[in-house]
Length: 117
Image (cartoon, rainbow, N blue to C red; front, top):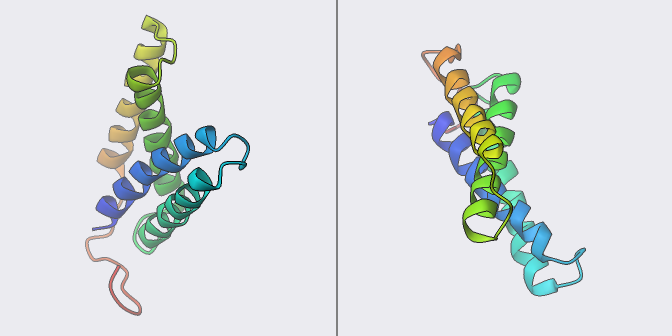
């Protein structure tokens, strides 16, 4: 379940990162409020993963998913410049994220000291 939470947190990170861009320096309150909500939820899901996953792996995946998602949305929907080098680097980024999942030493049983993960 920790990996599901980590993926949700990474997806939400894309939302708040884009929200920061559209907030015009935190001057558009109608964008700031959902951006802050997405930020808090994103970090809440990330924090939940740390009950099971090592912080080094979880943080690398969390930020990598956010960077990957933000780059894809920017290039496909927001008109960000696209180049072969940029596409190759984004593919390399997601490959590294998948690699971290494959080599992670996730415990067989989740650390569940006081409730659900």
